[in-house]
Length: 238
Image (cartoon, rainbow, N blue to C red):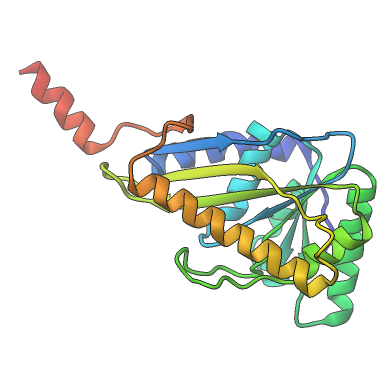
């Protein structure tokens, strides 16, 4: 396992650079934070869907701007080998093809949770198309919950879309998750339950966007003006 080596100085530089890049590539980034039972005194497991190259960087940005916890993120072995800087922002590797390595990575995640830190996981384990159903869902989150049932489980759904402007927009919704139902007696049942929740919340988010119902969202980041905005500005000056 490739372990994280956090660097506050690097994180400060990266968040500035990333802010610029997000403004350059996105028209707007919106957020709907629906959490009402967040308990910073316990470990927090955050599950997020994975459909874009941007997701890993958005986890870091979201933690810096919204979650604001001592966070660590599980990332694929290949991804960390290709982009080693992720170690400096709290990423640690996982290799699902190696049972031994997978156990080591889960044990590291469990250690972080027991130390009341925040652990981010992409349960799909790889990028999948945003509209793919059913989504893939690994059993790691259920394993961690079974062994640490006092933790908070949070779900983050990312939805990338074009609407009315030249550049895409990103909608982010953060919600609490209830896992400790008495009828969920096995790891397989808990995994299926979590998969269903993520699919339902992704679909609900999609419906809101299709129907232009973004009243619950607040603006997290405003991108640079688009070409159409510049053209409108100059037309008004004539």
